Length: 353
Image (cartoon, rainbow, N blue to C red):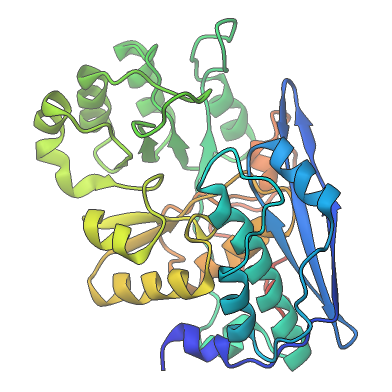
């Protein structure tokens, strides 16, 4: 029986649902977050919508709970129903957002089904949660024309409190050889997100083959994620091809099959459905492809849920799902270090930081 078949068989009763707002301001940037609350048999299952466009969140919440889930009898039936619904009252600004919202509903349904059954995810799939290795993803510069130039202050601030921390970084066009050397001396870098697949976003990076060469040479242990491949960059990255990984262009098992080398970044919300996610776990395990997790700036239950999945299916890779406090510029005291101890709830699909 496949992983998905195992969880799809869980009985599920949905009597009602609610949407709640959890948006947060980060300076000039608002991170939208809507939590889906599915209720039935005295239990509640929750999942987080991590769409980036705030107007899409507002339209969803304003429309309210318009879908009827009361006829489903199992988690598998719920997932099939959601896969055929248009969950957007108005078309989303970006097509991948459809996957993000579907994940919010299916993860909430998984949580509810498990709670109604009095079981945990790890019990149902027969895997023990393991200590979770994580990296801290942070930018060394700001956004926009008035942003501060890239510097190592964000790394130094975090290392001053958590000296064993490892990093996922986004190389920028202003990364000089001197800055790259300084980063190398400060801390281990496990993933370099080249942002080569983004266009028209605040995080766009102009493709620079020389920058690719410098970071690939300087950080020999780092995955090289989402490069912009053209004639010049292919030549530069040819010696490091097995370190090339993908994230932004992966939305299905077929995408993984077409693009994976030795590793992939698995963001559950990018795949949307539980069936697709679990099929990717099985395919990668069967074909010797490493998986590391990616975060989406989750503000609520979504962060714990991806930590839970990573602890079950790929606990030892450079998972970009650090406790959310590491994204806080203040860098709070008292956070756990990597690897973090497993913290699954006794029932359901939740994880306590």
